[in-house]
Image 1: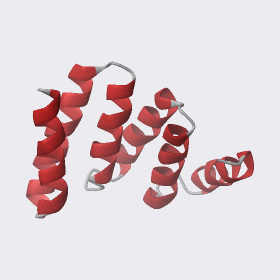
Image 2 (image 1 turned 180 degrees about the horizontal axis):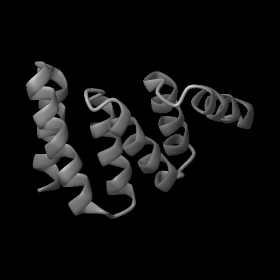
Image 3 (image 1 turned 45 degrees about the horizontal axis):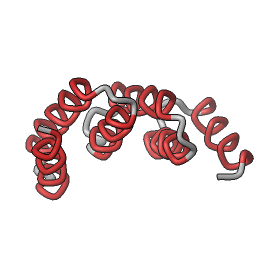
Image 4 (image 1 turned 90 degrees about the horizontal axis):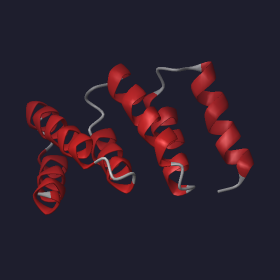
Length: 104
């Protein structure tokens, strides 16, 4: 990813920290660059500001797995399953259930 895109996303988050889409984009940019620590941090901030943004649980869990933090990944997936069930997002719930089952 070009640094200018990453910088643009950072600036968007600075300007509006509660912009879920910008924060999600920043988290994904970090993950795509292999910076999983920062990706996890951004996913956690996203979940704090918008706990119903269920994609953050999936991708946050994936980043935790890449870091070898499997217990944290499992917990993130479980919380995502709870939230996606509450909001009726069956598709995301099934994806979270599948990765949790694979992880064991």
